[in-house]
Length: 391
Ligand code: HGY
Ligand code: MN
Ligand code: MN
Ligand code: MN
Image (cartoon, rainbow, N blue to C red; front, side, top):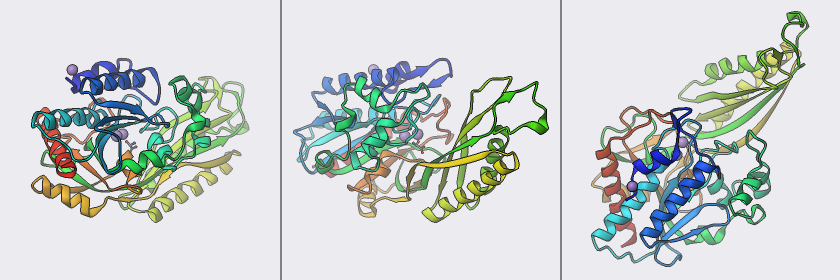
């Protein structure tokens, strides 16, 4: 019986008290095997696609399929619900439909996208972006993790050919509608289930500051070109630039070489910036970039900024959203600041999202939580939605 207890046991990373599993790493591969076993126990036909995403079919794969699912990877030290709740709920929704004797008139499928968080290779929604052509395979193959292992190598070790990856019109062509169930991230729901109206525009930018590596004790302050100083000031500049509901976060700074008694020779930091639309997001990033250039010049350092991934605002298909909300007896529609594979697919196929209430709103942390009865309500809502779309 697939339930969240299975996820917690497999994916927990005791070192952080959270869950760390990333695209094609051991913990995520274990979860993919767990999912495959659960799907096969339901006599679903499990077929990986050439981009590393897993598809479990109820019925012969074909056009007009009603697809649900989410992801099994997490952010470093994340929670158990972000991703797995959508996958476990999909398996349980299929159980409900079968227990009710439902016979779909269209194929149904559960999809598990790889590396949704970008926690290992830095690009969010990598599996769905490869499938839709939003990220080119030659770019993806060269993304490296913090141990220097390239995505192409990790994919190859997991049994996929990185040079066969890329836009998959066959897989996309089968999807008549995609509905992703996800734990809500933030506190927008005061009822168990809601539907998504939009996703903020958001992207990731890498700032590389270069200076002069030197000895922490032997180098007088006035003789330094320390890249850690402008990098640190960018963290505060991001906070300052995030106005009018925009969000700008620096969650990761990596000094090179990273010795306690060493003035760094370079520092990489990653900016995650989001806002209601493209113009405001880009304005936030431009303000932070300009400030970074000034900080670097003041310290005799250089800075290079690279856009690593970007997705414009997503407005979900209102007709499908309202149709589903109606089928569920009228649930609220709400925006989300979190990105999702559904946000990538929405540009290609009719797509919707169901949210399950998160009482604290906390996500991307071990404290992420949803009440069991709200999770159960989510399963019923997903089963109702799938039946409504596939009958
Ligand atoms: O970063 C996000 O919003 C998503 O959780 N990948
Ligand atoms: Mn179980
Ligand atoms: Mn997430
Ligand atoms: Mn997620």
